[in-house]
Image (cartoon, rainbow, N blue to C red):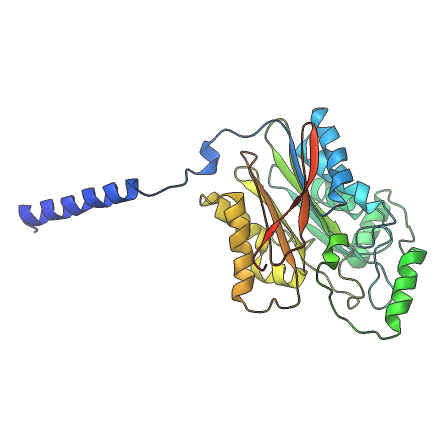
Length: 324
């Protein structure tokens, strides 16, 4: 049994501990603060400008965050001039255009497709997987059959421009990722509607001239995209293998749950990749929003930018980076 002296000694140290903690900056959990309800859209790279415009139009008309996310990225999927999303995407080393996409809504539902050929809008197939099946991900021939069974049509996704690029690559057939080629890469898009609900979408044709069958981070829930409507959302772009190994988007949302700002969380996500020591020839970019409409972005190296849209505004922003 402890003495009164030891009790008061322990009590005194407890008081000192409380006083010390009070002097520190303690982040209030984000879910205790009111949500932002004016409408917000974030998306990766310059093709985010037209995607944001479509998404914000839906939000301003009272639409849901998930509808805004889906139809925002469909704009980029349908653009044949872009060579890494949807039609016109650069093929794999066998000359096949294969697409990956995922979507998450504000209720924690998710849908995904990967290694999908011949379908113009993989994001809408992913949406149907989410809404109409008990599954999260469908792949390859199964994903294509599901799409065709649900009214999607086969489309030749290999444009002459991308075919010529592939034929030129075949002369050397050397696989070498090019830093910041991602400015024509994945579009990850996060939305917040007028009710403060958050959703996200991510779609890509993946790395140019990849091995046939390769799937990156974009269709993987928690890697290329993650949304928690209580906290916020995050998306990734760049070398998918590095994002997969750290489940970057899930990590960033969980760090926000612990009280970090979107910016602090994105920076920590990049530092986790740096800690693995294998980043000399790759680029990674993270983008995040929290429930209060605060935004964060961070990249491994300079060159990553993103589009940010709020009512009356749609602008490009250059991200800070770990390397100068």
